[in-house]
Amino acid sequence: MKTITNFIAVFALAAIFTSCNQNDEGEKSGAMASSAAEKVYVSPGEHDEYYAFLSGGYSGNLTVYGLPSGRMLKEIPVFSQFPTNGYGYSEETKDMLKTSFGMVPWGDSHHPDISQTNGEIDGRWIFINENNTPRIARISLETFETEEIIEIPHSAGNHSSSYVTENTEYVVAGTRFSVPYPQKDMPIDEMKGNFRGPLTFIAVGDDGHMEIDFQIDMPGFNYDLSHPGRGESHGWFFFTTYNTEESHTMQEVNASQNDKDFIAAVNWQKISEYVENGGGETMDAEYVHNIFDHDTQTTISTTKNEVLRVDPRDVPGAVFFMPTPKSPHGCDVDPSGEYIIGNGKLSSDLTVHSFSKMLAAIENEEFDGDAYGIPVLNFESTLAGTVKGAGLGPLHTEFDDKGNAYTTFFISSEVVKWKVGTWEVLDRQPSYYSVGHLMISGGNSRKPDGKYMISLNKITKDRYLPTGPELEHSAQLFDISGDKMELLLDFPTHGEPHYAAAIKADKIKESSKKIYRLDENNHKYAALNEGETKMVREGNEVHVYMTTVRSHFAPDNLEGIHVGDKVYFHVTNLEQDFDVPHGFAVIGANTSELLIMPGQTKTITWEPKKPGVWPFYCTDFCSALHQEMQGYIRVSAE
Ligand code: CUK
Ligand code: CUA
Image (cartoon, protein in one colour):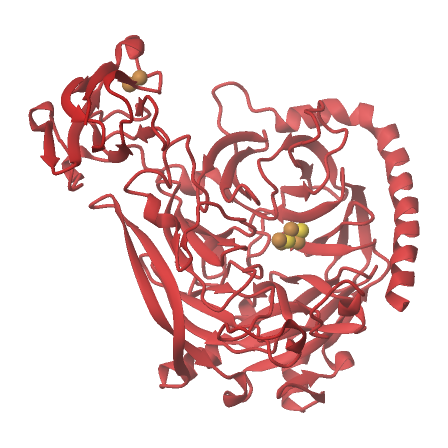
């Protein structure tokens, strides 16, 4: 009952907040427009200052934008099949979507995070989680392609992921839904005390390769979001929890009875040492690990069957709970590593914990009991401060380079700027509408960049021309270099952008790969010149070694194919010029097209259904004779 009353109060207040903001906005909008336009204008032919990577949410992908222009530069397919270039359809890439559940052609991506060195984003890779069928992907920022996907076993709702530690030692994956660990058939209403919430630490090698190092067997709460410690708190990881009531049904608002849930503080360095010294026990786990091998240009898919489980009670001093009010969502650590901010989403206050006070409280054993054997720290003992009455429904916080924090408020639909250390509110600006995450370049690292902030909004309504019932989500770019945040630009995003990461363009644009070298092409079915093209029959299977170059296919007339055959088109693009892909599409195919980058070989299959003479063609307008880039396949009866 108490919670329902809270909700009503929250919504009533939200209406007041929102209406004030809109009046304010109306008065300022005219004067703002011309100065804002100047700040986001990137002249034709010029490049943006930043790359921004926005999670594609239920598109399963990652989209690349230029800032400040808000121009969309690329969509990188990650967890979903992408007919635009054949990702997830081609023989080379379809195994990237293999899981222990079989081929899963769709994903829900939430949190991208750029690799770090010494707590600074370094632009080597970007990681992103898949929430639905738990996976973490690593995308190369040289090729802007997905290179690796690892499934997370024993997880369900891989949400508090994929955040990296200060030197990319680990990328971390939590579990939003508690589940039987290991999975088994049991009554749902026996959840309490019997479900678990394993947290997975994936070691990242110097070449980027991921391997699950260990899994911490945590009580069955919902682990919602997480962030690594940095600076002083490097070596720790923090996770927000909700539903510490362990309620199995949310229908009676059961899950919000507790006034406080927890932030779990995990000393991963300690657990890592424990594991290195032989600690932990192996348990069964079925998961699939996919790596794209650039040499052979194919996906190497491996099924694994065990994982190392660590019981936190066996590692004293490694895991603690910090009580945090009102179902915290975001869990954000400031650039110094001293402050851990928990955003209680049913509250108007932000709770800030102090890392040094936490260490002292641990030292002095200032505990208020325990939860399943894990010490619960006294709330007052770790509390650094409270940002009071800042707004309604706080979700996420990022930081600038001047000691300020920026928190999003979903219900009151605004971004609030406040001072780290004094907790005073400095500025607030409305977001249109109902902001979820926000992002400042490097805003979750030791060296944030205080120029721009984008708010990633959940509701679009009237911001763009209506496009039927479905509107793209809206992102808003703010200039945060002055005392007041200044709204510069609205731009649509693709899919729901839960989070984003951005990096200065000059950190990665020089290393961006331009072509694949033909003399490094070790694809099994490559034809490296037209002399190597051929058609090879193996029973019902026909392998066509084909090449493309402006402006023809070789071979371009194929005969001797029958209904009932399975034809593999292995198409090598002989071009060695930047930005000259060729496409390949054949009539009636039940897969996608192929888009083959210079120097690469890609393969698509075709099972002809009807006798006749059928065309194929290049789908990418590649030269003045693009329309001439075509061919015929003669298909005879079985
Ligand atoms: S979550 Cu908080 S608004 Cu990061 Cu998936 Cu979307
Ligand atoms: Cu090749 Cu169009």
